[in-house]
Amino acid sequence: MKKVLFTISAIGIISLTASAQEIKETKPAEANNATLQTIAETAIKNGIFAKMLAAMEAAGMQDILKGKSPYTIFMMSDAAFKKLPEGALEDMMKPENKENLKRMLNSHIVQGKFMSSDLMRTGRAQTVGGKEASISETGNVLRFDNATIVTKDIECSNGVIHIIDMISPDGK
View 1 (cartoon, helix red, strand yellow):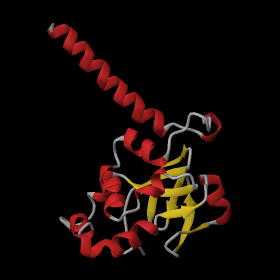
View 2 (cartoon, helix red, strand yellow; view 1 turned 90 degrees about the vertical axis):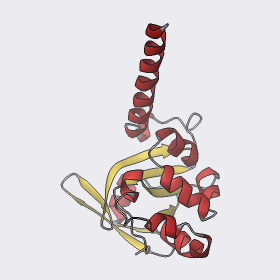
View 3 (spheres, rainbow, N blue to C red; view 1 turned 120 degrees about the vertical axis):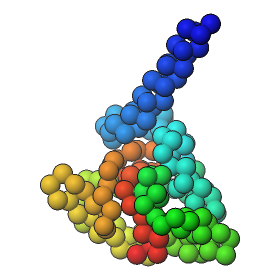
View 4 (cartoon, rainbow, N blue to C red; view 1 turned 120 degrees about the horizontal axis):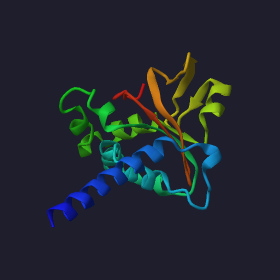
């Protein structure tokens, strides 16, 4: 019985690792629109966006992640949120700070589906919050303003996710 439980646990860990790796390695050419998941489903499956998903919900913006309209989202991983001062995220998610939270999140969302190659051609991205973010590349490092894009081109049925390593709480 212990051996069976150990085997099942090991398979579960391998499956979770494979799922996260699979998302990180998704390439546009491999994607089949019929089998792609929404941004929300992809983020949940990846398992590293709990804080971003909670912030989107607190701001009343979860429909962006689930809807049909294509969006490009520069998503902060849980590790990026850990770089904030202690209690900053919790403070941003208070009902009285909802508009500030929306402004910050909107500065990480672009209307339309833009792969990294599209972003590099323009060198900028106009966010739904009205901010013009710069896109640059130095060596093999792609940047969204001051943030490093650590994983790019995670294609979804309703857009694309680029994972960034930091957050700007004031949306600038």
